[in-house]
Image (cartoon, rainbow, N blue to C red; front, top):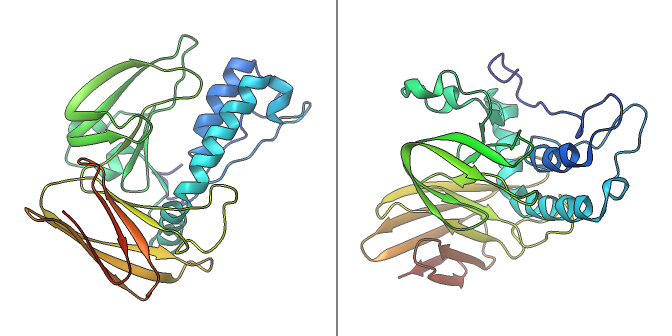
Amino acid sequence: LSLSGFGFWSHDIGGFEGTPDPAVFKRWLAFGLLSSHSRLHGNVSYRVPWEFGEEAVDVARRFTLLKHRLMPYLYGVAAEAHRTGVPMMRPMLAEFPGDPATRTLDRQYMLGPDLLVAPVFTEDGEVEYYVPEGTWTSLLTGESVTGPAWRQETHGFDSLPLLVRDGAVLPWGADDQRPDGDWLDGLTLRVFGPSTGERTVTVPDLTGATAASFQVVRDAAGVRVTAEGTDRPYRVTAEDSGAAGEGAGTVTVA
């Protein structure tokens, strides 16, 4: 669907027909909550997590809270899809057209330009996925992964491969209790390498317009971020070193 030009697509978590096995439902929660929009829906059974056990409630909570923190990033990607037609959920081929290994990948995707998602489709939690060139960081564990490489991992119900691309700057929301809000309130910019380079990241408002933009410069002295469109304080973290700083206007992290 994404290759056909659909900017937004999703699925009924657990599948529409019948009643899913609890294990399938829990795996599908992680996939569904890392999709453009997330829908608990079926035809003959309720899909509320507590119908599938306490662990399903825990999994739903974990990935719902994560999606809420990611909303400044995801809503910005949604606005981009609206403006340009580039899908939110992108086949690996679309994001890495020069890498022939991505041509047949159909069990993983990019969520926006900077997040690689590989849902778990096996009963035992084993997952095999491809990491393109560069240094990637697990958003869930902080582990670094270097590509190009194939990876084989085993994940519990509360985990899956979720990697952040080298050079990404993730706008991270402070409020994990709701998907909408004022994302400049308590904003953190999470900077994921490389050691040098420049990038501009925007944070949208609820109309999809740019509420503020941030120029991020990384060099031997550290990370320097300059805000435009806002005079409110924000936080910057260098994810590789753990260094952090906070302020308004320009924030420098050594």
